Image (cartoon, rainbow, N blue to C red; front, top):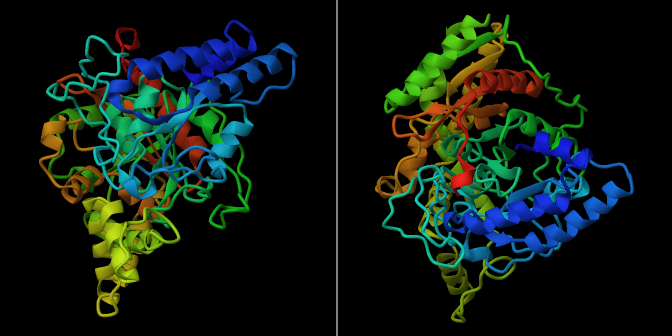
Length: 501
């Protein structure tokens, strides 16, 4: 079942919040080998479920998400619950407040099942670089015979990666441990794992959702992401979470009507653009076939499918890496071991304390991006790298605006170049190279601040999920989700068999 269906069953009392919470709690324990959760809060979720059932029995007005189990990526601040960002630097940090997105979920009566695993400080494309260890993809995974005895998973079983950095959230939804999860999306970090785990990943327009309490990576690119089983569920979550927040000056002040999806969507008359530059080197035949099949489906049902050009796409990954590293260097400066973060046992000097604390607290990926960012921001390099990248970012944004002004309603692209690779092959490349390969179709959207969604669109030859991405105009979530729901209905993707878990 998805959240949309469960909400109806809770309302007609054929299912209780307690039963739902217990079922998800059992699933959390059963799939613990996948390492999706870093902190489980199932006990407090059961308390919240009891209160939801009491409201239901008393006939009190119910909120949209009353009694619905959810999960939250471990880079969102949560009152009284560790928020680590998957890093030794923040191990043991207990925030005194909830992120706005978390508070909105709790205010709606959602049941928080726990905090999910991620690449350290959300810097990665595989969810393999966490201090808690990698997240494992449930698709094709061979569970050990005893899944609840605390045994460590058999790493000799060559499992598939989940994509990153919101891999834990994607796995939690895919395995039925919750019905929706918060991720974060800086360059594709919600869409990528959603595509590789066979679920829906939505990156809304920049400014539509609050970033208050989302521990920053790249302020100008970070966007709260929504991961669900279906587009209907994504629309429900979006309607709950969107809106101006006085704690975040980047949220838009204008009100936007809630997304309302009809039971049957239509694409008749829709103009769909296919960016020719997205036929990039390294694109697998499986993905090309899935992409072509979706384009043919759209055309056969009355959509106008045309080729378009986004000429500055070839420069986007370099632009993204330069700007990202610069903002990472700035944001990570606060973790000095004195005001924030792990403090090393060094008393030689303040400088030695800083150096030791940051070396011990950050992994090599984070340290590398900090060093790159500081290099780009040197006075002698500032104009050569940072300012030039800002100009290229504007050109990339202008490309999208030009295409949409020409009459295109949505763009249809791959989400990733291939289906999920095996862990042994994935780690053969360094983090930077992996991100260059995996973010090629997703990070442009963040540079332009546009909404995008990935939906499961087929299976590869080895039975792994393939996702396709739809990109829309700014604040066109209604049209974007309607188009995605139509595609979802036409494809009827074979969901992960949860009965075998």
